[in-house]
Image (tube, rainbow, N blue to C red; front, side, top):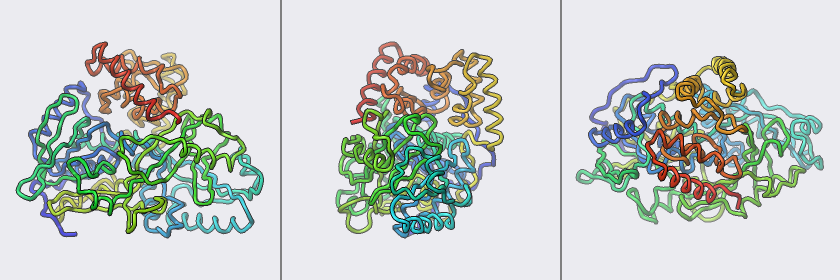
Length: 566
């Protein structure tokens, strides 16, 4: 790869330590207008197209170097694959069988870093790996988990340990006893992927980056033979403007295809990108008894039962995908595959009637050599390429290593002379030491009780907002919205206003699917809550009653189409 000339206006600045501050509380419409104005007036050092975890990682990385950085996203932050993952921050046990030791070591190092930089959003959870079969299976899997520890897994949660049959059944009572040999207990990281991506974007904004959603890149701009920016269409107003930049990064993942401004031609794309579809299902925590997550292994197949506050997230499938990323939906065949895997190892006989919802996403994997057949063994490593015209493309990778992907992409885009990345020590918005987060939760529990809100809601607030949970409660008192959104939920109505003012929420879908996961977790797709969300959010965004009704109908149609069990 040849070096690019260094950016003309690079500033060697580095943000100070500590939790990133919140952006000023502007009216959401005014805030967006200011961001659009900056896009059209300024020339940026780095312009990123694509608001998934890789894209927001790139704009944060550039901003952390003291650069003038901006990001445009045609939908919402993490509205594609980055809100449809397994919710794991992990090294990847199965990659050991593919001898990708470097990838696992790298991912485990990043897991440890994210546990420090975002302890409110990434936490360690215990997982049980039950062992079935002959006595020979135990030493085989013990070897793999020992290697996992040696590559870095033991640094955060301690080394794995073996438990006998009876203890395995205490941890996971639904395990089938037949041929059960015990299990291995180990730890891995879990997260809410959509909220994490949003927090990264907000951190970039807090140190000067511009992040604009519903802003579609429609054309690549050039000065001579070099890329000099993109033409952007505001999908809300229809306005268009030229956004100029010294370096442009394509972080559109599976959307970087044969169509659109970054099209490379089908023959080039197919030799590099191998889209893989992954489906997950959601089940109530009460339906599957157990105190740990589960890693279930069948020949040629692995399923994770990832513990979330009110449900299990179960997946995933891994199959080639040839359609448009925005058209992907869970299929009955994939749901059946997941149910079969779980029912082979558990005695519950789960059916589709037990499922709260389902979703599918597209992984933009980098293929090596032939692209035929299964995607299970396609590399999760990332690739950065700088085209002859100067456009930088970041492709492949896995959620856990997003920070490294972003660093490498910005390094490649700017070439020699660029200031170093500072994201290895930059806390994510809302971060605080675990002890402080616990104290915040205790204080908020007392405050909420004094307003007739269950104290139990405090833990959920801190898990979603970290140290900023106090600001959310303050906002609730100020706006008279310090009440539960629903009796069976720990979400506050105040979070709707917070989402509009601080979290770039511009639609009902933004709030119910990504700022919260209520649209996925509730079988009715939160239809009972959506009218109140439309009313409060509409008040922040200036919607009249007709606009609220239209938004409500659009949300419900899309949510049922994307998340209902097929």
